[in-house]
Length: 571
Image 1 (cartoon, helix red, strand yellow):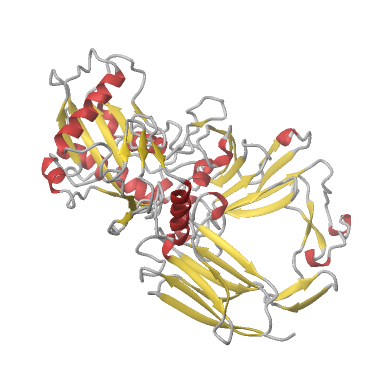
Image 2 (cartoon, one colour; image 1 turned 60 degrees about the horizontal axis):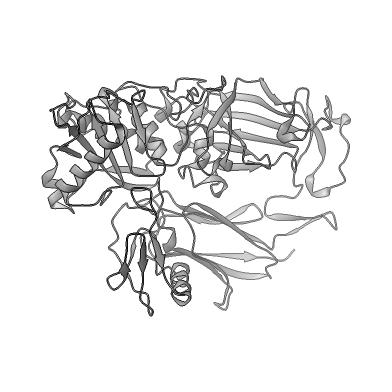
């Protein structure tokens, strides 16, 4: 996909396609780090045709902090101060602009785009204005991260498209590049708008460019909102149905001031973005529940404002309610602290958001449906066109702990058995569910729930014999760093024979259960090909190995490898 929206086709034969796919699988080709040699290709306006034969690739040098994901790693930014042909330009100096966006110290701008992206992502995304690899670009900038260009267009007479194109041409000429060039994101700053207005800023979705007019370029809320579009995030509408009025997240229009901007995104956007452990339910902190399969469920939520304190219990930050359509619901705890301290709406409440498309994984407008205090209930009377009600009840909100928590219950169906005491509940006939008791915190009155696995930690439940037995299965949980392709693991038996292994991971959370292991001693080994482990220089990676609930190995900080022995014992 080219910068102007057109597409260039890569024309290769079947053997070359198979070869490329094989190189992707074995790690020889890494997106963002590998370049395809097209020096002998035939290139036309819309097609690149490789000659028959071997496909050649080049692996570029690893750049510290660079990520393979759109919203994690180190991203290089450039701000462009525009001077039109009549001299119209922002009154701010390039040094002031640099501080307003990147916090470089001119007037000690404490809350800016760089700081807020870092804080909302808890260090998973870092803004870079280091151009030392590109001396010509570094010499051309007027201040740190800011380039000044003169354009041939007239801000008062020319249209929006013509002005943007003129800026692009001026930048490319001055830097001798084709945008985006070495930059991940480029911001155009105009003095104002005099025709085709009605906007403060605009962005290209899932792309590299944003455009701002007037002094509002310095507002962190405007910066974050437009970069959100670059991240493929759509607008967030409010309970009133308007497209921009969800003020629990930056994809509404909540903040327009320079130094007030400590606010992140809403629950639906947090599901979509790769922060907090990965995209969607790849992350252990993002949980999906299908009420039509599990009519009764309970969760304890932690707000993303305290995500860094969610280390022990690892509570979810988002719960997705699956509808069976692309219009799912998302629940979050809108904790107003840390990077979310200046949140505008529903401080410290549970928020419920629905998307109108995309399943929460792709570009889709969202709408705030409700925000709830403790003991409040939100009900959809005809959930997902089933004719049955779905209720979400906030059982508790506890701000006295760190992190603060919100307990919620989700109940689907009019025939779900409500109760007041345990004797109202009937045995479901499933031994491994435990006993059925009345939970007064579920539903409007109370709901019958199972107490859970009756076996002690480290043992597994056998439904057929209604008994507990020695655990013979291993569960492996892995959260990668930003270089997931470097990570692998294996399990060897006492003879050193590999009985299971894992590799070729995408960035995020992964898990695997290995059942029916024979008695004996095994060795689990975690590897990192680069030799810097999976935490914490290139992301907060970690792993955990458990036997039916008992942790036998965990970590993340190591060199090329780390090994742990464990034993499958007799009953």
